[in-house]
Image 1 (spheres, rainbow, N blue to C red):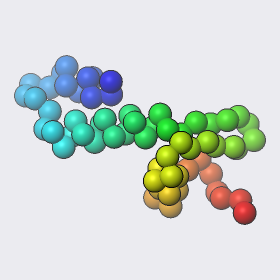
Image 2 (image 1 turned 180 degrees about the vertical axis):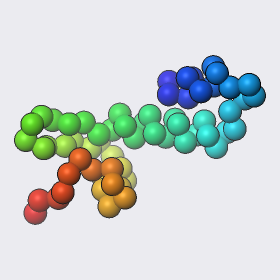
Image 3 (image 1 turned 135 degrees about the vertical axis):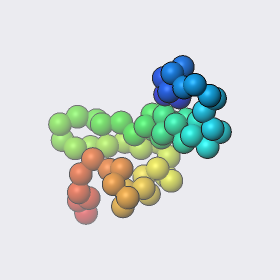
Image 4 (image 1 turned 45 degrees about the vertical axis):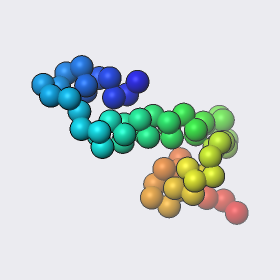
Length: 63
């Protein structure tokens, strides 16, 4: 789990918001998959696919 690395090294317990953020990042990263050199990307969650505008997509949109 992504949160394990900082949690193992922290002096105090990680705040819940930080742990939730790291879990969310891990889950969302698992929902996007690069399907090869042609720039085809599969996303299993519509709300993650909608995050293209903030910069989560791999490249420009082609319509």
